[in-house]
Image 1 (cartoon, rainbow, N blue to C red):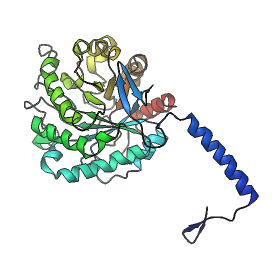
Image 2 (image 1 turned 90 degrees about the vertical axis):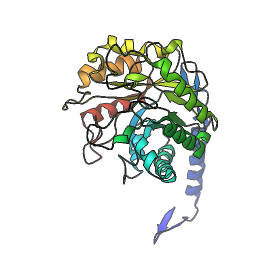
Image 3 (image 1 turned 120 degrees about the horizontal axis):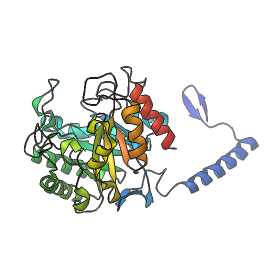
Image 4 (image 1 turned 90 degrees about the horizontal axis):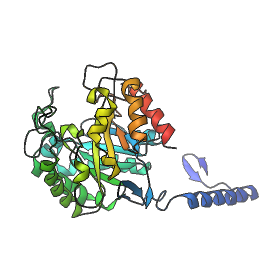
Amino acid sequence: MEIYGGERRPAPPTRLHRRSLLTAGLVFLLAVAELPAGEGDGSGRLDVHGRELLFNGKPIRLRGVAVGDPIHGREGRSASDYEVIAKDWKANVVRIAVHPLYWRTQSHDKVLTRLAEDVDAALRNGLFVIIEYKVIGWPDGHFEVPTWGGPKHFYDSDFKLATSFWDAVSAARWAKDGRVMFELWNEAIFGKEDWQPQVGQKWAALEPFHAKLLQVVRKHGDNVVIVSSNRWSYLLTGIRKDLLKGKNVAYAWHVYAGHGKNDPRQWADALDDLQTVAPVIVTEWGFQKDTDRHYKGGPDDFGIPFVRDFLEAKGLHSTAWCWHPVLGPSMLEKDWRTPTEFGRFIREYLREHNR
């Protein structure tokens, strides 16, 4: 096509053009023939089969990044970010959040519209999408209050509120799109002292709440759902012997530098071989050297061994936290373009493995 004064008009046909078109057409047909069914045409679905995550019946590994909340962290950002994430960083999945505060205080139509802008942009760029409900707390119990002075109900754990969110999100249209997954409950914590050894595993008490949210989603579709355990989604012990009943269920695991004193044996104890019976998606992981936060660490003491011995050796799926210049550990500098040390590590990991 040639451009004349801003209007696109076809160039005059020639033998060279016809030959080029025939060659291009042949190349296109060969390329399409090599694509798995559904890829390239916007269709297809993810499913769980035993420990495997399948796309259109074929095993797939998801490796990508979390981007935060479109309202809280990405307000005013261009949807072109997802093109960068897909084409430059080579991610194949993104995790997009909605905080309970906004579902509680804003028009649900407004929240869904803003969420749709990011979800649709990600899908257009060939990315799978995890929609997560960014709650931190126990259903109808304790919930975390931001230490940075944010609103009290930022991570509100009201269970009726969560139920209404998943009813609306799955009914909106995403239950009809098998490329979209639902992370039902971001991080469960029983109380402020959830890290204490005496608290232990609370899966038996948490599982019925996941079952109720799963029923809400299943009224509308069979999307893959991702469920979590307590201790901020870190402690998965015992779950492999008591899986949540239902189809298309995967499990979240959150691991940061400093967890288990960076001892792989403690990470393995927390994972408890759950990946041998069900898909495990590490929906948050990361590190940062120059910080006093709980995720203080670097490539040598956390990043390299975690990628090598867990993500790759155990076949775990993952979305690193966070593709953002403020939310830590941050992958981007303030210009939203330049990767931090952590960002460079993640980009190299994705480019190497998502060929």
